Amino acid sequence: MQTTAAKKLPLTKKQSDVLLFLKKYFVSENFPPTIKEIADNFKMKSQNQVQEILLVLEKKGYIERKTKGTSRGIKILDENITSKANSETQISIKKNLDIPIIGKGNAENYISVFLNNAGKIEISEKMFKVIPQFASRVEDSGLTKLGIMEGDLAFIKQSREIENGKIVIALVNEEKLIRLYHKRNENEIELSATQANFPKIKFHPTDPTIYILGEVVGVVREYS
Figure: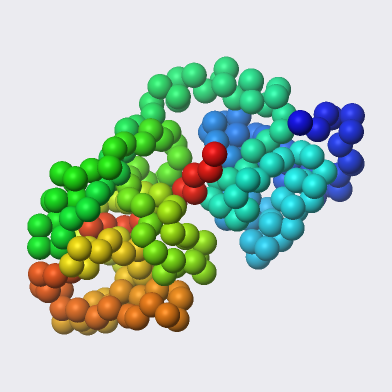
């Protein structure tokens, strides 16, 4: 049952400022901001500060987070805001994009992942700064420390020019791996995880058994 405004506990100025930012952002974009976007707006050095404020807002009944720490996993418990957002964003809603979710395939015939697609997902064109061309399920927990969990939906921009340190999706034989990318030199590329139990993968750029499909531009965690 949603907490009514009369029963909600009072907020500090900082908490009120963050809540106001959440509401304005939702009305403008029709979806909530990420933790990083909140931190950047208030010039907070640590995203943990944002998490602490969101936890208080949730306990006091102003927001709900069904998936803690998830990008855009915030629900504002204010029917007026939801109604206003729906009325003010009718045009942007029509600009939703159908993004294909790639399926199984192999590096030597990378087109196969597109041919064996696993359906489509509809997203707002404003959801990411860079519009993705396709999406893929995250198939392991290699980047858990970056908040990317097995089962999440990663959105990818097709690109062959990747900067060091970026997150990519790679076909390694028949596996789809989300990893950190590092080009060590002209003859060696390294894919690494944040978890110690996942080995680094080093390969020559022309290795036919490994293919970089593109750069991950966003990750969404779905919940019912």
